Amino acid sequence: MAKRKDFNWSDESEPHKKRTKKIITEHPHIRELIGRNPYTFLVIVLCVGIQVALAILLKDVSWWIVVLASYVIGAFASHTLFICIHECAHNLVFKNRTLNTLSGIFANLPQAFPSSVSFQKYHLKHHSYQGVSELDADMPFGWEARLITNSWFGKSIWLLFFPVFQLLRPFRLKEIDLLDAWTVVNWLAEIAFMVAFYYFFGAKAVMYMIFSFFFSVGLHPLGARWIQEHYLTHGDEQETKSYYGVLNVVNLNVGYHNEHHDFPSVPWNNLPKVKKIADQHYETLGYHTSYTVLLFQFLFNRDLSLFSRTKRSNRGGKLKVAPVSINNDPVVTESV
Image (cartoon, rainbow, N blue to C red):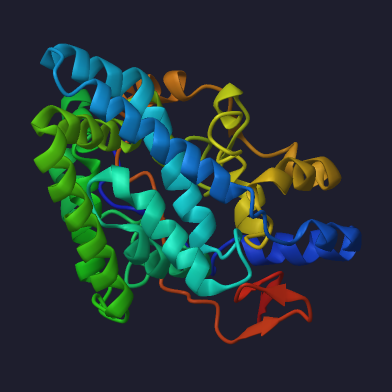
């Protein structure tokens, strides 16, 4: 395979709406899986508690123990909190949008960087406009892909500092307001929490949280999730891949990514049921079973780079929304 010098291009709109409509037609009872899971908030409380307790316990230990604990324990708790923030972004925890936003801000506290509210704004656009760089913050910059190249070293640096690159992308999305009242609330809450934590427990406690966050989305098997979701590891025709591995148990079924994009109003606990009901639509798709294998594949396969993504300008035209819809996420939409 020749080294990619640009993104894969598609003239079609995002690929999930057609499959959603087909599944709804064949299995109308799948609508029963739509809803909210308020127990997700208990997961948030548990993981916030774990991170706070461990940070306090580690405040006087050696630095190598802080780093090791953040890699083998903290990264998993922080990643699960990120997934809970994702559920809040889709309003899949509570009926009240404000409660979901506040829950996301609370889940964000041990992650050191205020991102919950911004993620909520940009992630919903990612679903509607997958691959449209003006609206999809998940798409890398062209300069980002050229800078990283396809070397293992460049890709390692990219994963290690993934939050930094992700922080820059919203500035590209000119059609979305970067700052609003809830964003300010998120920033103030995060700054107050981290300053207080540093004052009472010191630098090592704070750095445990920072290291945990960077590992949870970066140079760690969990960081392979970003490659799994939309990188072209199974040919240019399939933009979205699912992960069916053991880490779904601790990470709230985040691997069921095709299922999630097809049914964004289905909470995490029901995503395996989506696959079971409509398995004929998913069994023929490529998928992953190991984040560790995928991490090494991405790093050392020179055919894979940040250019291994599909880009488009087709926004799908006017969207026709089916009668059943919740959380401002359509159950099924169709380009017309």
